[in-house]
Image 1 (tube, helix red, strand yellow):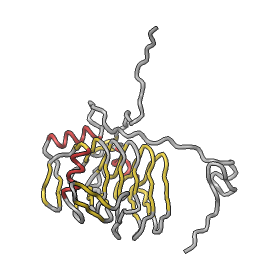
Image 2 (spheres, rainbow, N blue to C red; image 1 turned 60 degrees about the vertical axis):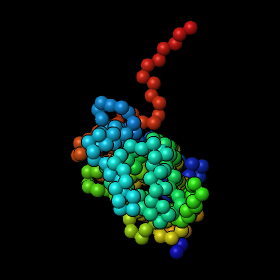
Image 3 (spheres, rainbow, N blue to C red; image 1 turned 180 degrees about the vertical axis):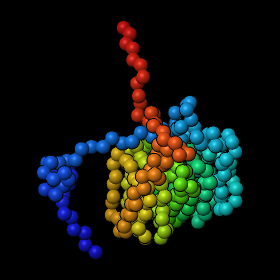
Length: 259
């Protein structure tokens, strides 16, 4: 197949067909939407607080290869990594939580499949298939790793969100059907490197400070769904409109100088 571009629209080069026509480019920048990751509340609108509340009400379930193995919605990074190791090479970790919050990084590697039935939120970097192998305690697991995200109901938050970066690496494996039904949000960069087998499909949206696409052998298909985005970013909760006032950016509420 051949891709023919009708215009070149970049920061430094803009041809006549760049919208709006004759404006001289580049287009106006757009502010990254605020996401309330972990404000303590009240109100209890942040992703972390909502996950903590669900955990307090006993509404959390994690499955290791189809068997219940944890009942939390909020995890330290080390505990979440233990669960990924527990399912072993070729295994599946399923998060049956509306929101799963990891207070650190996530590194999916060593031939694991992660199924998220809701939103997976992290404080630090999220890496999917950046590494082929995973060695721990003398045991070495290998393989392509895969993530699938499902929106359980029309009013459920769903997606993959972080305060930092999301990297889909060389050893990511994607199914033939829909991969992500939700919003992919990174306060820094989202990168895709060499999608090898089948196209990567997103229903919802991708929002980041920077989007990098490197050596994509297959297609990247994005189907915009504004309702999925609103619920995925926390702008709607149970049908109600929410306006987040907190984000990973430091906000100075009060300032004093003393000499």
